[in-house]
Length: 492
RNA sequence: GUCCCCUUCGUCUAGUGGCCUAGGACUCCGGGUUUUCAUCCCGGCAACAGGGGUUCGACUCCCCUAGGGGACGCCA
Image 1 (tube, chains in turn yellow, orange):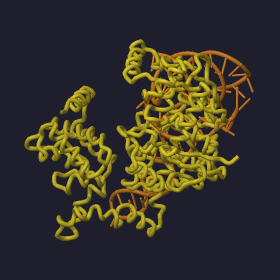
Image 2: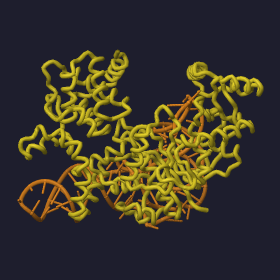
Image 3: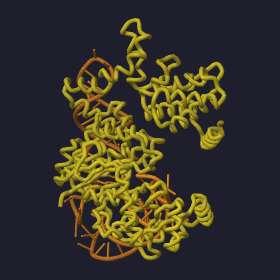
Image 4: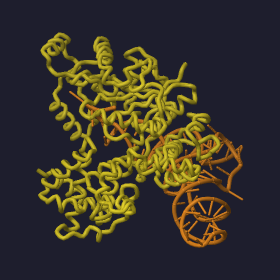
C-alpha cells in the first residue's frame, strides 16, 4: 500500500502555525514511508474563504519548505484538490446517503434550531438536533424539495450504544452515540460541510493515514458512520496533540502570535521553526534536539509521538533560531539577511515612504527601525497627550484591536477606512485618535505614515504591539475588559 | 453541564516493570573565556498530580480522585 497523507487547511485568515505543524508531521510520515503528501484546500465555507488566503497558504508553506506532491496549484491524479470544485462529487455522494437512508433532508429553520438549542442549554442538556424532520413522509419531502423549499441534508445517528474506534496513538476510544449530533452534511447553499467533504475526499484521494489535531476526536463517530454508509474502509487515524498557549489553552492569536507570517517577518528561519515544531509532541530516538526535516524523516517513528498538549514556548524557539543563525556561513548569513527584508521587493514597499523624508542616507535607518526591528519598550509616559487621557488611549487601542480583527484585507486603504470609521464612531478627531496608535506601533509620535506601517508589519505584529501598548498603559482588568467590549459593541 | 482526551522539573521532553541517587534541552542563577556586549565553556536550582491496588519490585500496568484541555455550529 502506498502511504498517502494530506494537510487540509481552510483558506480563511492568515496561514496558521498549527497548519505548518500538521503539514510537517503528515509530510514527514509520508516521506518516511516512501509515500506522498497532498495539499487540499477546504474552502466549503463560502462566506469566509478567500483567494488571497489560499495564496497566502501556498506562500507560507513553501517558505517553510513544506512542499507537496499533489495540490490545487500543481495538480495530480486525484484532483481537483480544491473542495469548491468538487461540488458535483459531494452532491452525488449525498444522494447515495439519502437513498440508503443514512441521511435525511431537514427543513427546520434557523429560528427553530436556535430556539431548540436555547431550550436545551437552559435545561443543561447537550445541544443536539431533535429529529424533527427524521420521520417525514418521502412524498412530502419530494414535494417540498420540488417547490424549492430550503433544506439541508443531515446524518442519521444511532440512538443507543457506543461508537468504538481505534486511534493510532491513543488506543481504543468509545463515545456514546447519544453524544453525537445529527450533523448537517449538505448546507442549504448546496455546499457540503467539512464532515461530508473530508470523508469523501480522503477516500477518493486514497489517503491511507490521517494525522490531524485532537480537536477532531469527538467528531470521529460522524466520520465512521459515513465510511460505513459508503461501504469504504477507513484510513488509520492518529490524533496529534494540540499546540498550547503558555496558559495551556489551545494556541490562539489572542494570546500568542499564531500567523506563519509573523515568524517570517520577525526573522525566524523556516528550518528553525520546523525543527522547533518537530520537538512539539515528538522526540528523536537518540534525543538530539537540533535536526533537519530530512533527518527527522529518516528517523521518524509514529510510536514516538506523545499525546500531551505541548506549550509553544517562544523562548526556546528564539534560542533554537539563534543556533541556526550562528551555524550559517557568513555568506549564507548575508543572503538570509537580504532575503528577509533587504531585498528589492521588500525595499520597494518601504523606500517610497522614506525617500521624501531623507536628506542624507544616514537618516534612513532611524526612520525604519520599528519596521525592520522590534519596537522599543513603552511606558505610560510615552502616551502623554494634550487632550487624551490614559483611559481614552486604552479605549482607542482596545477598540482598534477589535476593529482590525474584523478586516478581511490587510491593505493600506482598507486599514485607513476601518480606522477612520472607528474614530468617527467614537467621535474622536483622526489627528488625536491616531496619536496613541503611532506610539503603540512605532514607539514614537512622529514616524512614517501609519497605515503603510500597519500594512507592512502585518496582522500579528500589529496585534502584539497594540496589546503590549495597552499593557504599558496599565492593562485592563476583567471588569474593564467587559466594559470595553460593551462600549465597542454599542458604537454606531 | 454532558462526552472525550491528557497528566515526569516553570517550559519542551527521555523513560515501554529492576539500568532512576529520574537523564537531556530552554529559561533562571553562579563562574570562566572575551577591551564592552553577545557567542562559547563549566557549574547550580528544579519534576514522576494525589490515593488505592497488581507485583518480589512501579515513573512505567489497573482503578478512583483532582487538575488541565478539547468537542458539543448550515466554521473548519
